[in-house]
Length: 178
Image (cartoon, rainbow, N blue to C red; front, top):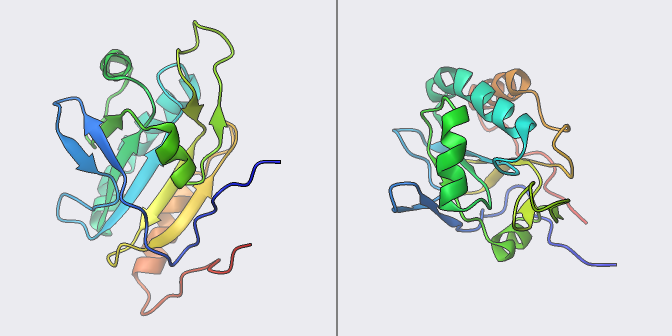
């Protein structure tokens, strides 16, 4: 049995740097575009049609997320070439990064899979996750899946974040983890 890290909500989110297509490096935990909260969507890679669908659906929620002060970024373990090829299927405006390492995946407590075939991909990759980091840099919400078909509904996520952001001192839930 392998022990894994489990991030605890309310704790500081680890600094995770990844690369953007333009060659710049971005700290995924930092909000951008005038927002004070950040949502990070970890996706499996270009080989996953469910991921492509989810990332495009996320674009449809961008405006609502911006309205409540939440910026969005996505990341996978894909290479730069794989991301460039994937961009042909994506219609997004939020930053999308590549090159998430296995060490970073482990640091975030993600499930890691091996490719079934060489046609799928040429590297281990992380299964989906969604992290929300608040203005203090702490983990406000987390969803980690071991399979591409178990992801939070984005309508529900946006409504929930709007509710939390609209409350005075709404507590972070699930701060006790074992």
